[in-house]
Length: 442
Image (cartoon, rainbow, N blue to C red; front, side):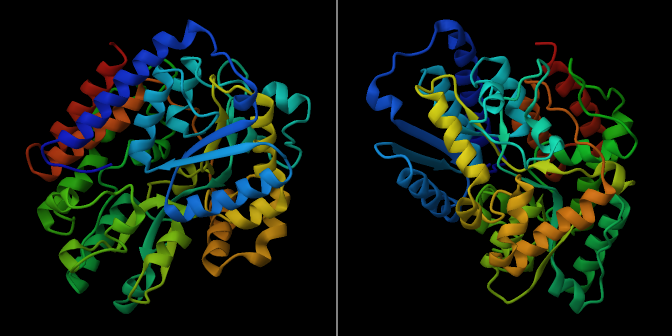
């Protein structure tokens, strides 16, 4: 997610990904590729993440290979934005990796285009053992036809990761139950007392907006398209950005031309030259706490709070951190299913991964590995179990396939125009409703 005021980098990436995925959809009915013995004994596994995640994943793969003589694994990782372009390009050429990481906003798109396989047969015959996976977690990989197309690798929750040491030093406390107004008030106070600015979720997808709408029992999407039609319903979200840039507490948008927000060590919470480039918080997910804490060089302690909302309990949810799915192009889907089962249920694999992809989806493994986890990882688990789970509601169903364009292009474009003061919050709300609604009429 490289940012640029001229829109060029993300616009090129989005166009390429959309074009490739459109071609993939056209190719979906062309039939599977022929497989040979070498292909059948090999697994190509692709995911997004950091080098640290890659190192852990290689250890897990090596353990799997010890138990599956003659099998080869080719692990491939990318940063989040690049990952989806590569995956779509591979789909268009019938060269998708055998096992692919999947994210909730993309699930319906890949299922609808016939690009990933239903895991239900492998669950039913016990190849993938889900006995210790809660139904609520398992069901997040289910789509409208009743098939389970993706297996959650772990669970997390929406989280504001913030510099607790900085806020403690000036007497500011972040509550577990705070409104959007509370958040902006704290942003002002932090800026006034320390000079440190805020990244209020700039260049995120529409997740934060959808979270805010849930407070009123509203949804951003229906299965047919955009569910919200009134610009007034989304204007408070955009007003946050307008207030931040006008009052000086939001980071200047030019700063984001110098960094890549999909790379954790470039986030303004942990990497900055001065207070003008620094954010006291980051909108993200609970499982990122340990990784971000490891990047802090000034000794400050980071902490977690829910995303703000007028009704946090109603807005909040437990979220599948990252899925694994078996692609249409996989030559040996049963071997791929065995790998997913190993990742899910092997204690050694869970010890290695910890909470890198969220709290383990297997409830038994959470208990078994807790003694091996760092204090930050334990804090991440406690946040999900003790803060979010008792005060949350069921996650929304996966968004319609066309919502990918809204997340990848429309929302970041509008946020960018707001922070460059080319439009105001009211105009941003109108443009969002018009442009997002138009996606479903194409």
